[in-house]
Length: 452
Image (cartoon, rainbow, N blue to C red; front, top):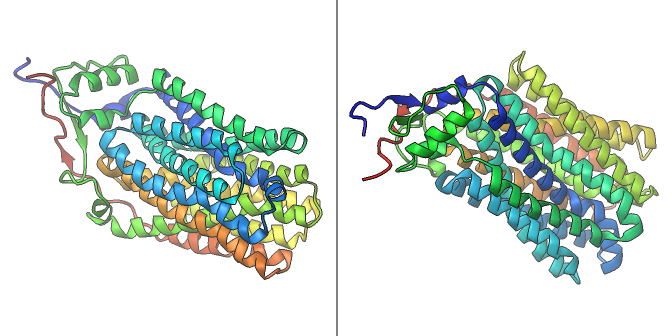
């Protein structure tokens, strides 16, 4: 053993590494996770009109079916976000993908509302836990200069998955029925689990905190930066909040309380609104006389807009204040949603407003994640992302339910979109009110050798 080992700052090593094969591999694999997540999260919206017709489900009964997976997502974000900090991002994420894959694959066996609700609840646990760990893994493998862009590229997989799901649904569901959609949505993530197990690395920040982890973190750092001179008997340090607490209390210490509460508010509002749209918009349009495949295409346009908007937001955020750009997206997204209602079912207006909603409100959801990863140190980063997403999932549960409650009143078409567009203006104010996080303390996270 080297009596005078070198000491490395893991975060600085990652930041100094060039963007190479390993970082790109992590982004591609987590992009695939996000795409599978997005497909399976939105699949119920694409198939709801057929499911409701087959099982005789009324509009007020659709709300709980929609919200079952979202309730699971909230629980999954809390449970698996914390487990990701304790057990590792890689293993936790693979387990989550397996859970939502099996849940989706089993959904065609449902024979009524209760079966659907239970299976969507199980699916939701996996859906909710996958993304916090995927976001955290990318953030901890990416150089600082490209971190925001790489997190954004990873997360737009969610919208790409929605686009893919919409394309599959419009091509197959009308002719072959809703069950085929769930078979596809279940088999894809289960196959992905095998690829993740074989190829996906663990976070260097997490490895550096594990007793006996020097050889693993040194090997991973050499993959991230082949020119680096990292040895198994060196000491690897990570900048963390002082202490070893990984619980929710750490999200409120060291002047993080204000940002935590504002982030939770923005996540809650945006997912409330987006999941109302993803679940109810096709149904509302069908009720206004649209064909199902045309209604699904509006959601395809929404997801396409979210991909384009996320890339545009990442480009703008690299040149201007990221929070101001994000706040602007929230405000414009609220106006775009109101425009859907003001279109009163006219094809051109609804399609254009749906695209604009994706460009602004959809992109805003993607833009929340880079800011959230920057708000917390590595020790509680997955917990921080998980809790923020859990509050978002709470909003996503209430969005479809509120849509069902509102539907009972049989309001005019425009009322839905004014009611659900206005809250995004509040989210814009919340993001604008955030402040820069304080610098993290630098602590020795691993000062142990690999063996006795």
